[in-house]
Image (cartoon, rainbow, N blue to C red; front, side):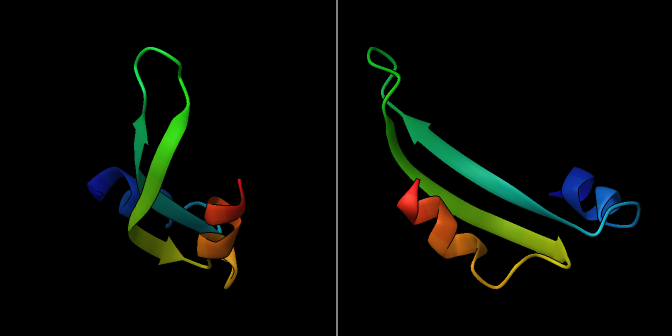
Amino acid sequence: MKRAEAMAARMPGTATLQIVADDETGELEGATILGQFGEVPDDFAGSLQAA
């Protein structure tokens, strides 16, 4: 979280994510936004669910 917040000072926006994937298949099971800093698009959360 601290790294993403610091990066937001140099970039338009950053986010910290928690990714859960199956170790055997590599299949994505879920993604959770832990924090957003700076200018993150309004549809950012929706784009994670669509992926």
